[in-house]
Length: 377
Ligand SMILES: Cc1ncc(COP(=O)(O)O)c(C=O)c1O
Image (tube, rainbow, N blue to C red):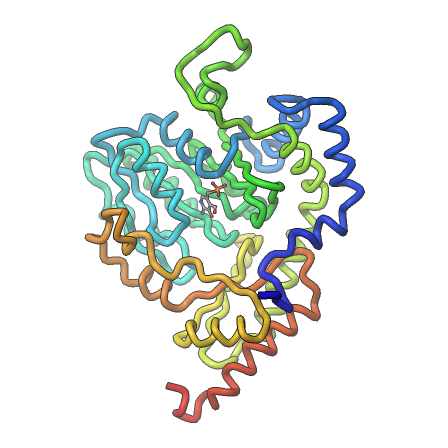
């Protein structure tokens, strides 16, 4: 379907920055600089400085960034690692791929881990916690780091959706033993394909991660320090990301402005619950703008029929996916959230007019229901 308002619009960004994209391609192709080259090194340094960590290691996906972190921290058979079900499956997959057992806790109204459930999920086998800063909103890292310290647990922050987000002035991915990002195209900072990053302040971990991503090689291709994988961030992607990162602050600002327009336009419309507005301790970057409604499925049908592309993340919670063997968990807030959420278009290239089209379409849906008349059910 040809949508009037698209959920993401990569070609529009390419058209806007065509000269710069083409310049990057020409530079990399004519220089033949493809693997572990200057652009990657530069990008890693910029991300480390921006996030506030000593190291940043480019890998080929956020998924691998999680897995390599879990492996580097020594999670393995017999270990338990606490995380949430309301996340992209890769968070849980990283634990399983190490041979450890994921222990799932519920979320709260901000879509993030319910930190009050962590302590009761801890057993003598618990080795770590993976909080997920979903939708560009930070978890309560004071509580999580205090619990981790008390029980001697490792923390991997899944900041795949939260580049730029802050908690108490500190950026996501700088609190844990490691913190990871995804550069999947739709992410806060996306490349023309896949990409990921691990951030850490720990020199030993950083060296291990560098070895893991390049078949055990760190400083010399002749010295193999361990068995590893081949999961490097390609230099071409790093060069694209480097160029795009120059716009990052203005793009975050734009996302926050769009979120404000949605907040205002959708407040009091039908039974819509707009995402919680956080100020003070939290700096949200709005990777996603997620609303809730008991009429979600009908609303989604209406929006799509009106030419507006929307996304449901996720209609089936991971613990209810039959193939994953996690359906012994009962996570009522997660399950209700999965029934009610829908993500609206939000990206820097979205115009105010397009935002208005979305808002008006949502309003039209509830008007059509004669909301409040008792006829809506
Ligand atoms: C919360 C979360 N964790 C992990 C990932 C995995 O990142 P990637 O797609 O780069 O492997 C994603 C990406 O969708 C994500 O949203």
